[in-house]
Structures are given as structure tokens and as C-alpha cells.
Amino acid sequence: MKGIVFTELIEMVENDLGIEIADRMIVGADLENDGAYTAVGTYDHGQLIQLVLSLSAETNVPVPELVRSFGVHLLGRFHALYPQFFAASKSTFEFLPLVESYIHVEVRKLYPDAELPSFDCSMNGQTLVMTYRSKRPFADLAEGLIQATAEHYGDQVEIARENLGAKDGTEAEFRITPIAC
Image 1 (cartoon, rainbow, N blue to C red):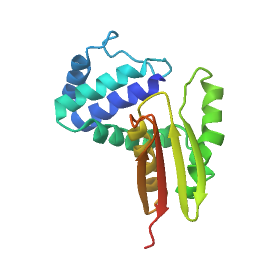
Image 2: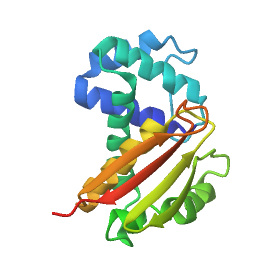
Image 3: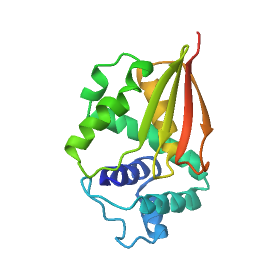
């Protein structure tokens, strides 16, 4: 997993909860690298899980809630760092189908060793059906990213999630439906 995910998690915790909580999260995770990450490095996703478990123990916030919140934070950072990915789209329903066919293609050009999840999209009437598949159990992160995308574009949507496969967060179907105002 690319280091930017780790550095952004630590930055989010520092900004939202303080440096002391971030330090306790890192110490509590008992990482072999003591929480030293670079944005361009590659690290085992298990370390991210250790960090989130430690943060959950520190804050008494459930892991899924923390990971979804991190997804919301991460989309904001992606928009700040890569605004060109968002510029061509005017809505959640234009942007999300581009994740696999455009954004991940560009990410692979920058980071050929990146192991990205896959997103299959289709429309069912007005509902966008987006299926997440990954070797890593981060469907909660994907849900946070989807939620933040709708917020970014100002779209009122309902997001329904069904865990698929082993139901361990490695595969999920999201149904994103516009809410009539």
C-alpha cells in the first residue's frame, strides 16, 4: 500500500485529535518501523490496520467509523493534490465511473507497483451500482470516499452497501441513488 495513505492517516489524526493521540496511536500499534512512513514508499496494509485498531482503542470509536471518516478525509486530500482528476466531472455520477477507467490508469503510470482495488460500475435506472473488489479489507474506506465524492459535488444521494463474498470488507456493492429534493 502506498505511503501516502499512511501519512494522510497520521496527519488526519494529528489535525483532528492532536499530536498526543497520534503518538499514542503509533506506539499502541507496535509497528516494526515505529510509524516512519514516506508518501512514496510502499508498506504492508496490515500496518494500516494496526494503526486503526490502535486508534479505535485510544478513542473508543468503532473501526468501521474511523475508516469511513478517513475515506472522507482522503478524498479531500486527493482533490487538493490531484484537482485534474475532478475537473472533468460535474457530478458524483460522472466521477465515480472514471475511478477505474481513468484515475487508476493514471495512478499506475505514476506508481507502477501500486496494488489498487477494482471498481466496476453500471447504471440501473438512476442508480449507480459500484462494485468494490480488493485483496485488502477496505470497503469502509471506499464507502467514505464515495460519501465524500457526493459531498464534493454537492449531490444528495443515498448510499446502500451490501458486503459480498467472504463479507470481510474485500468485496462490496454500493448502490448510489440520487435523492429528489
